[in-house]
Structure formats: structure tokens, C-alpha cells
Length: 213
Image (cartoon, rainbow, N blue to C red; front, side, top):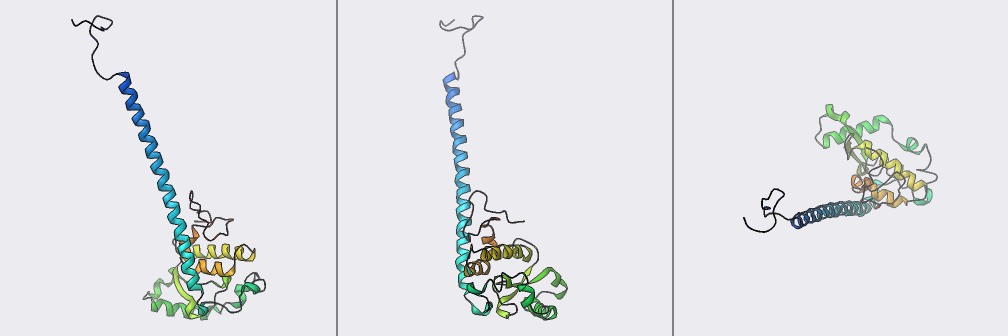
């Protein structure tokens, strides 16, 4: 028998992985976990930055679109918001009769090649809504949106009410609100919290998705 360390019953101890080797493997495992965690954190930050840039780009695109006077109601200016859009009855007071809007909808359905039987799935959309100083009936301001979905009229209507609150509370200018809604509003939507009136205020941790579904 080869002299040296022996087991309790006299058998030589097997050569193999030492406790030092196990410790090294454990250290490598911990290092791998830290690296994976760091990679996830980096991805979260990158996603947040992309969302923020998307909101800012949408705002800039909207600024160009909202400068189209044909889409706007000349009665609504920053100086007149108290007498116009901030009045509770303003939208009802200036909106055209129902049959006039239905005639516009029929024209838009035909323009987009949508079967009239599917018309109930679509809403007449004002690119700049009346609540933000958009023209109630100018053809340049009218289009169609599906009611449902992330870019649908139901979600847009909630966003419009939020933006109007920001304008009437003096937390956002009328022009910024118009630019936000006339641009890539569905991307900008993700940058607003319930109490936020910052057009590029994207929360990089949550995406600011707390206005509604």
C-alpha cells in the first residue's frame, strides 16, 4: 500500500476534486449569477431609454403635425382655454349634429375601403380632438380609428381627457398637448403616469403604464 493518507478503514483516500476546487466552482457560479443579473439590469435600462426616445420622437413629429392650421379650431388658443376647452360643456356646444358626423364616417369608410357592415368597429377620430382645440368637422382633422386595441379610440379618449386636465391645470401648454396627441400618441401614452404632465416623462422602471389598460 502506498504510504500516505488513508481512510478510516485503512484504504487510501482517492485523489480527486479538493475542497479548494469546489470553492472555485462555487465562486464561478456566483460570478455567473452576478453577470446574468447585471445583463438583465442593463436590458431594463435600454428598454426604458428606447421608450423615452420614442415618446420624445413622437412629440417632435406631433409638433409638426399640429402646426397644420386646417386641423385646429381658431377659437381655441392658450389665452382662451378658460372660455373654451376648460368649460365642461364645450365639446357638446361645438360638435356637429350626429347625422353630419355619420356622413363623414361613411365617406371615410369608403375612402379606406372598409365595408360599411364593419363600420361599428370604427370610430371617427379627430387627429387633434375638440377637447384640445382641434376642429370639430374640418376634413383635414378627421380620420378613422378602431375602437379597440393599444392604438384604438377608447385608449386615445382616456389620454385626451388626461392631457386636457394637464392643460387646464396649467401644467402643460396647449401646443404641447396638441403636439403629443397629433404625433405618435400611443407611444407617448406610455410615458405618462396618472399624475404626470411631462410629455417625455417615461419611467424607465415601469414604462409609466398606469393610466389605464
